[in-house]
Length: 69
Image (cartoon, rainbow, N blue to C red; front, side, top):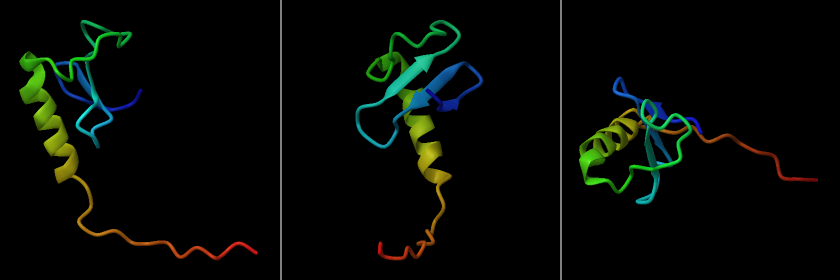
């Protein structure tokens, strides 16, 4: 699963909900054990989620879609 990867090997997936996935890809390359709820990784998780939301565009352009025939 693709996600944000930090220099220390943490990878974040599914950040849009309060339940997500966080892996240490150096220690767990096959991503078997999620660290999302692990208190030792809470600050990394919070930083990744904050960075993700901070990097979103401030405005969104809606695409006009023609109604189906």
